[in-house]
Each structure stands twice: as structure tokens, then as C-alpha cells.
Amino acid sequence: MSAWPGALTWARTVRHRRTGRPFVQGVHAAAAAAALLALAWTAWRGVAQPHIALAYGALIALGEAARRRPRPSAQACETAPLGSAGTLAYALLGDVGGQPTSHGVPQVVAVVLGATLAGAVGRPPAVDRLARRVLGAGFAATCFQPLHHVGTLGHWPAHSPYYTLCLLFLLVLTALCDAVLAAALTHARTGAPYGPALREELRALPGVGSAIGATGVVITVAVAAAGLWALPVFCLPLLVTQLSIHRYETVRATRRQTVASLARATEIAGYTSAGHARRVASLGRAVGRELGLPPAELAVVEDAALMHDIGQLSLLDPVPAGATEPLPSDERRRLARLGAAVVRQTGVDPEVALAVEQQADPYRDQPIAARIVRTVNAYDDLAEDPACGPLRALERLRLATARDHEPRVVEALAAVLARGGLAPPAL
Image (cartoon, rainbow, N blue to C red):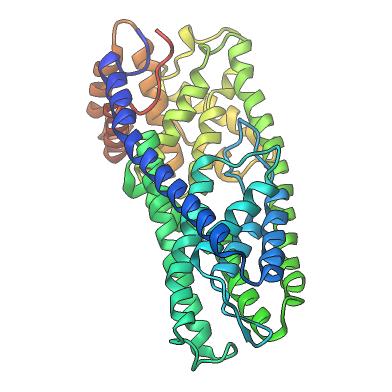
């Protein structure tokens, strides 16, 4: 019997994706409609102050050209902070060198769309990300440009703290709206709970998101005082940041390959069943997301799940079916300590080795990553047994919540499985 929920839960997943598809299509349709209207309006009225539009368009295109698409196995999202900062800066642009600008909301959307597509030639951006950028640019420009054109902000000079506070307020409002939209798209596409998805988006804002927003505001204020010459000066730090992110992603991809190779070692040697480590890692990440863990802790859960059985390589004879859950507790602890010793030699996060080492301890002595790995691994081991199956496996986990499995983790696992959580193997 498969270690995954049966056909009923798989049908629930398919049904959710079908019900979520209209929302995704609606977002794409709204972005496409906004883009077409903006292009038609700009073509009819002409480009206002073309040299300014060209400068900001070149900046956005450069940021998009510097973007790198992650490898299919990578978990990182596509990053183009320079293009995003340029988008915000153009949407919130009111003055250039002390002279007011005359472009409006349609031109902002048209320039952002054209520059993004021009910079992404040969490497088209994800449709969701392009839709979010178009809608985000339109939202920020709609909030700012009418106020600027009617003179509401005219009594505040560009160097005034009130003007800057107004820009920061619009920036925060735009970032929050984008986070809400991104979480809604994730929920509609994957069926992941909306609350944890939104929390994950909001947690990402203080990092690169704050750098993007701060650079956009600084560019706007600097260009208002010094002119377009301020663009390359104030964009250079963010460009360096983008290159640093790319280097970090390269290092992370290399580490992920090391972890994946170690995870497959037990399968190749015949100590665990095919796909066991990947199933535990995928389901463990879903459970961690259900519990609202931040991305850093989700990465620890995933890495620990991939390498949780590495200690079995020390055995002379494989465990029957590779299932460690039926083993005596002392034997499970010994294998966990041996596995942690191997993990520490790989140079991964020390929390990963700690989670592997403590996966067989009572849950009250474990960190949250070890609790998740212990419970999900036990579920997969038990559910693979034809004499047990998925439903009885969950029942056995609930009966062991006094010592071995944290009730909160077991209920999160049950919630993920009840939604169909992950796609089962092909039937």
C-alpha cells in the first residue's frame, strides 16, 4: 500500500487546484487588462518626458537582465531586486532635478512592462511574478501620481521629512498588498493554508524586501534633488547586493546537491526504500509550513529529513524494509547519533545535525525540526507496511503522543494529509 493518502485525498487536491484556478486566471486577466489599457493609453497620448522614461526603463531592464532563474531543484525564488526597486522608484517619481514630472499611471505600467520584458529576453519571467509586478506598479502609481499631479504634495519639498514619510507609507502599503496577493496565489495554486503562506511572505519583507523598498525611496528623493545622475550612484549598492544573492544561491545549490547525494546513498545501498527520504522531506516541509515555521527552520526540517537515515550505513545488515520505527529505542538512538556524526562532516547548519541526532528522543527533549522528522518518518514507515496503511498509521501516532510524538505535529500532519497535501506516486 502506498505511504500516501488514497485516491480520495488525491481527488481533494485536484478539486482544490481546479477551484483555485479561476482566482489565478483572474489575477492574470487583471494584470493583462491593466497592461493593455496602459499600452493603448500611452500609444494614444504619447510618452511624456521620454528621456526620464528611457532612463528608468533601462534601469528596470538591467535589473531584469541580471536576474538568474534558479535551477529546477532549487527552492529559492527568482530574484530581481534592482528591477523591483526601479519599478517602485518610477511609480513614486514626482520631481527630477527640481522640475515636476508629467507622466501618469498608464505610462508607469507601460514602461515597467516593456522594460521587464526587454530585460528578460530569452528568459521569460514567471507569469505570477510578472502579474504581481504590473499590478504592484499600477497600485503604487495610482496611490501617488494623482496626489502629485493635483498638487496635494506640492507644499512639501522633496527633501522634506513629511514627503519622505509619505513615500515610506505608500511603500509599506504596496509591499503589504503584494504579500497578500503572493500568499493568495500560493494558496490557490498549491492548496497550502493561506495564513502560514501570508506569514512566510511577511517574514521575507524585512530582508531583501526592505533593501528594495529603501533603495526605491532613496532613488526617488535623490533624483528629485540631483536629477537622473543619481540613478547609477544609488543603484550600485543594490546591484552589489543582487550579485551577492546570486553567489549565495550558488553556494546553497552546491550544498543542496551534497545533501541530496547523501540522502540517496541509503537508497542505492539498499538500506531504505526508494524515495523514502524525499517523501519524508517533502511531507516534513509541508507540516512545518502548516505549523507556521519561518523559511530558515523549514530548510532545517527538509535537510534533516533528507539525511535522517544516513546512520543506517553503519549496519552490517539492512533493517527490514528500511523502517526504523519498529526498532528498539536504544537502537534508534544509536543510529541517530551515527547519522549526526556524518552530517556534521558535511558543513551544513549545526541545527540539522542536532535534529538528526535527537530524532529518536522523547519529543519534549527535541527541537521542533526533530519532532517533525520523527513523526513524518514514523508515518511513512508505518504506512508503507501493508498490514498497517495510512489511516492506522495516523491512529498509532496519535496513541503515542504521550512520549514519542508531539500532538501538535501529529495534528498538523493529519491536516496536510486530509488536504491531499502532496501528490502520491503514480498509480
